[in-house]
Image 1 (cartoon, rainbow, N blue to C red):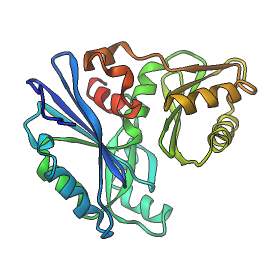
Image 2: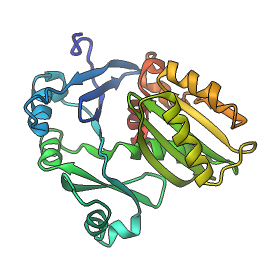
Image 3: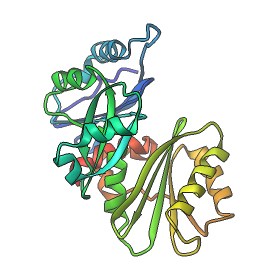
Image 4: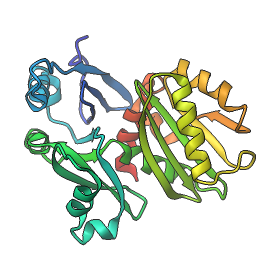
Length: 268
């Protein structure tokens, strides 16, 4: 795929960076210009080098954009009150929570809430991203989904949102526009996801008849989950595409929801 075709200004770049690939979306002028995934060559075991090579080998990522938003996936993270982050206690909390951190601690606010997320990122990665994408908004991967849910679900009843993405299931719980919890779970089968959902549902004290569960992500897996989860939860529905996402372009319905949420983050 030639991702550099038909690119025009103004446009924005969205990146979703995992341990295996870079998901990307460039959008502007009312249509999704390009989207896809770039696989990281990590056979040498040097993640930062693999990330650098992937960026430099894809010149369209280095072109000028009006804005850049980057979501970094990290297994070691904590959802924290913003006041704790402001007090400079983030590193102490992370060191107390995890026996082995990979590198430096990145913190970001969750727009629309009084919470933030602290996460562990391999040394040099954040510095590379800031040098390469000046002014970029760098977030933990759950921050955009949290901000989306807080903005979307303001009713009295609670909502549990599940985004299934590859081998990950991202779960966010919101009540009355307030963030109750957020976590990412690694799964191998649909039953794994169902277990995680029902465990969170019970832990958060959600009501099987009054509260709702919204699903996004892989269409086939989402359908399987919906059928099975309706055995326990009355209101299980696919997420309706938010109106503000339509400006991303006519191909919006084929995009991974995590990319959509990150693209929308600047609106919150």
